[in-house]
Amino acid sequence: MEVKELSILDQIGQKIDIADPLKFFEHVKILDATTNQIIKYEMWPHCAYLIKAIHKWPLLVVLKAKQISFSWTVGGVADEWCEKTGANVIEISKGEDQAADLLAKSRFIEENLPRHLQHEMDKGGTFLIHFKNKQSRIHTVASTITAGLGETASLVVGDEHEFHPYAKENWGHLKATIDAGAHCVLGSTADPTNIDSNFKVIYRGAREGMGDYYPIPGVNLMVNEGEVPGPNGFFPIFIGYDCRPGRDDEWYERTRKTYDLDWQFRANYPRTEAEALSPILGRTVFDAPTLQNMQQNAVKEKEIRQGVIHIFRRPKLGTQYIAGVDMAEGRGGDSSVLWIEGKEGLGRELVAVIHSNHILPDTFTFMSYELLKEYFNPRVICGADPWGLMFLDALIALGYDRGKIYCSDKKREKLGYIESGKTRDLDLAKMTKAIMSNMQIHYIPAIKEFFAFQIGENGRMEAAKGSHDDLVMAACKANFGFTNYKYANQPIRVSYSSTWRG
Image 1 (cartoon, rainbow, N blue to C red):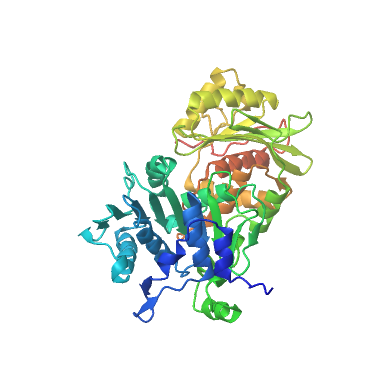
Image 2 (tube, one colour):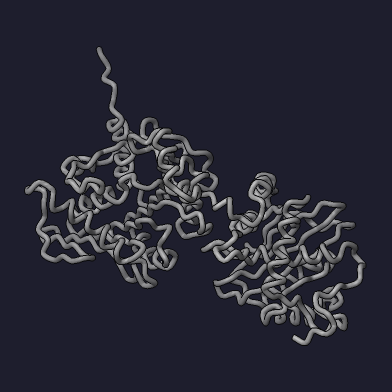
């Protein structure tokens, strides 16, 4: 008996065994952006897999290349979802223009369906479609600070979620309705200038510990081995540039030549997940290959205390320790950091760190005091800003040796390291040399912060949009200590002359 070879679409249907939503798309027509002609929706293999995945997985995050028909696909899914009575679809886009454009795709699809499949729309507008006989609706909103607040939904779509200005706030507002059973799909290309966006946090959370991707044969997309959701509940998909028919090596090189900035091209048309998630390597302050090597050789914590104290090397006699501190108010914004570094011979490494943005200053100071005692009461370099001075005063009140705290004058009357734009740039420049020397950082969030430091448009060294600098600046203070105190009992060297008046 002859065995019939299954088509790619049939294989996809077998892999995701649910009621077939692809039937609806057999009747879908879209507007071709190049020719401005109405054409039949092309069911490319990656589109078929995406449609099925939206229906199967309650939480879906899609890292993708540009122009792969993602917006038309989710617009069609929104229409198809409204075949269910009482369905409520919420679409969130970067701004009002993008929100209106996304809803216009759903409206266009609905208006060009065969007559027997169309539903009467008794309410309509730029941001709302309401289907009278099904009592279903599609509501699209721009990403504002209140978008999604108090909403209930059966399907949530975040189009180009990476670029939403209030992505974290919107996700927080919609979390309740998603936890109640709504399906959610977040899709986006990557922004290489934004190292820690809400989209990347969710995507990386879905990939954490899941091993290498493997390709779905014939589909040109990548999923976790075993096709299971990640630790955060999201099912991650990567769709590269070549998923769309006709995008071969010749197309890739031809299109590449049309871009003045290579990093923009790579972000729009990534070949791999790593390429899609990489920062702008040409603008990074710290040497990227060295940081990558650090990440590969980083040791796991020997101990984690209270969720915020990370111990990599336990105290050892004969090791010179110096601590750098960067303080914050501990109310969910910037983080407070105690960075303890050890030096043996020519080698230096991060041995322990306290890192949190939810510890109040008094609690952080007590934790720091206890940890500093373990590491033989090392020198402490902390900023002389109000939060830093509060930390130092409290540290001394707990009994810490004032002689071990860096002061900015010879008389030791001015506690703390006085910072300015000039000292900051100088400290960062010296830190680049330390990174290139025999130094090891084990704390992965710190390595990511170093990776995210870039040369801004103004020529200044600064954290990329969406990232922070707390760990880096704490490390810079420790590096200042090692630069100026090469030996354990070396006299203090002040950073300002005796004529300084503040």
